[in-house]
Image (cartoon, rainbow, N blue to C red; front, side):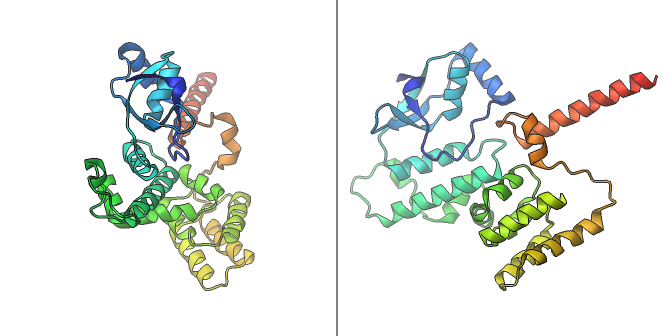
Length: 282
């Protein structure tokens, strides 16, 4: 049916960002010309209106295009089934951030475990039957086209403090070191973050593994963290690598910009600056 976009409400705890980026511009332009070609999926909302299970980007693009209605399929479903469908409809999009995958996989795993723990109903619908063989991380990996180990590693990222997880999204900390750092206690992660900002360094895999090992052995002090990080800095100080801390440049970009978009803008501005400099020298 066609429903006003004003009646469509975001999914609670939706782990995927809706970015007002170049891809959104293209989607809004397509909707202006052709309308919403694929209906969203929603369920009735206790407080009124409907809750979006799949179609957050289509709703945003419709509003951007000035379209006030969009086609949706309305389906009654329980909370856990809604979570599973919401994750499956979003997780294979392009440009999904590590933090988004981490939260999405965790939400789906929790939902599957809850459903597996409840007695099955007689005459359950085909939708339910499709989800429950097998129950586990293996099922999530199969649905997402990832290895079981990789899904487990993404889920572990939820143990990172928000500041470090943001650095992972910004590609300032690589995925493998980030996984190792997720085993540190929150207070140790907070100390590490302060040192990373002060020293303008990022942890290598070997450093992250050493930090994890020291933490698990109960001997990771602030001095130990600083010493481990400064060793790497001394080794790489003269390599010519330039690091731009996220907190120094984020003020110049909209919050919706991905790290790749920021990189493209910076490279474009540098190219323009280089051309102007060349013209001045001539």
